[in-house]
Structures are given as structure tokens and as C-alpha cells.
Length: 204
Image 1: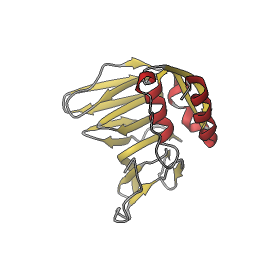
Image 2: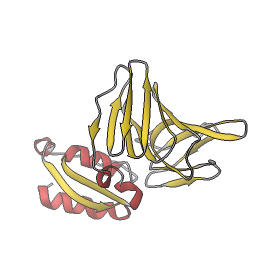
Image 3: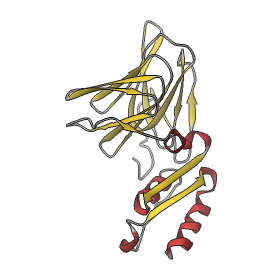
Image 4: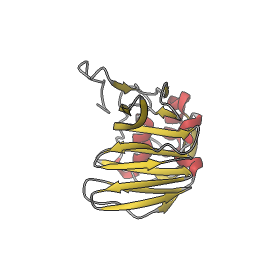
């Protein structure tokens, strides 16, 4: 579905966003949940309260409006839980990336557990969980302010990321430049201009 349109048979209980769309979910209790582009998720609730989210694909951000009541995101075969602060979970290509922006996040995975503090990140797949790494929120969370920020990112990866936010496909015809580094900041609302700039810089 990341390369095409969502199926017409998608369950009615799912929340989803199209290419380039970002949307906050209403009625999620004590947290504000924002879905990024091309995201599918199901809400978890119990006793009339929002307890968490099943992230089926894409990316979700959680901001606590009040502390105390835990909120979890289930993605792949792991669960990420926090009781305050801000965190983000991204589920793509068989890997799940969990980022703690503020507060603390606990990751439960069949192979291990991880405790993330502010400005830390971990990645897991079906087999294992990575170690904890430091991150720059200005890069990881730039999408929430309408930007894509790349810092020494492989050109192929940058184009894949840009492609998530726009319809159609981007095909890199010159394999020799796939590993060239891209550093820059681009507005999500003007990604065709970003592509024109990259074409010029790399002679594509």
C-alpha cells in the first residue's frame, strides 16, 4: 500500500492518511495523536478510555496532555509505552523505529526490553532490538512542522522519503549517485521544487 492506493476493503475502524496528508486524531483522551503521511492505525480502548494504538503502517506521534495514564503503540511484534512527554513510532519495511522526544518510553519486545530517555531512539524488527542511540529531534520530528530535514543522508534514501509524501513514483535512473550524501531542508508542501533542486545538484 505504500506504493499505491489504500484498498477499498480497509476496515472502517481504521484511521488512515493519504500521501502528503497529516492528521490529528480526535477523542483520544489524555494524549494528542498525529498520523503522518500514508499511515494506517487502529485505536485501542477499554472502559471507555483510549489506551493505545495499533500502528499497522506509517508513522504516529504522541503528545501527552496530562501525565499518569499510560499510552501504548503496538507496531510489529513490539509495544512502546509512555506515561508522559512526547514520542514517535514509525513502522516501515519490516522495521519499527521508536523515538523519545521528551520524557521516557519503554519498549517491550520478545527478544529484549529498552528504556529510552529524551532525545534517544531504538529500532527493532521481528528478531531483535537495536541499542539505544542519540538523535536530533529537529531532524527526526521535522515532519510535524511541515519540513523534511536530511543530514548526510544517502540520495536514494532521501528520494524514498520524499516519495512517501507525494503521489506517483520517483525513479532514480543513475545508480552511480545512489550513495551521494544529501544535506538540506525541504518544505513538504513544495516537494516538486525539492526534486528540481536535487536534479540540478546531482545532474540527474
